[in-house]
Image (cartoon, rainbow, N blue to C red; front, top):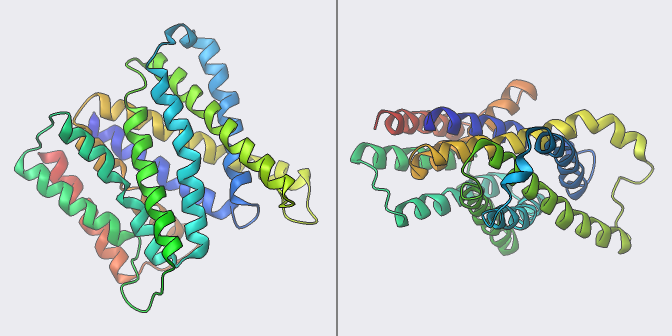
Length: 288
């Protein structure tokens, strides 16, 4: 079950990142984050009311608040780093956040077998290579590296926090709702501050009509991200966190494959090799 839900997480996050990347070509990244999360809040709010999940409120929801505070910072840092580029350096570094939940699992006493350790090592190398790292001829601004590392460890912290925010399925609905409300609060405040500084929330010459036209895509990104957090939490609660974290972090492979399938972007040799290693690591982890 852990492997199944973790792989589902990778697919959902990979598709959400792909969709989010496409949307940022049309509207500012912060607007993408806020609007997509507002849709998620509305849907999750209905689920929480319908299932009575609000009755499971308790101190564990502070983990969800923490995840909600860290998430927008990590996402915006990542988008900013991508803007500074080069993407072939930023994208692989962004996947290093897997170190956070894996370390947390080891600290909490998990001891993977030799085969699983080998799987973790192979999968992490594959994840980094799948991003298509530029090993030569790629000048990188120090700010881009710092922002990418902030994003990576932020993503890893969200994984670790959300796994602790609930113990039941209905409790998970409530935790995800609280996380998203926090996301919207933080992101909305940042968007408001940005507009007051004269930076528009939408491209010049456009208006709400553009946002309305993109709403289905924004909803997909927000709901896919929510679902990914949910499946990851289930994976981490029903098996080794180390396995759940590594398998869930295969999402760069999914993003690269989506770009290949939809945008006809050719996979570089290093990306294809990385995808193969990531899959090999997945087999070793599952077999262990």
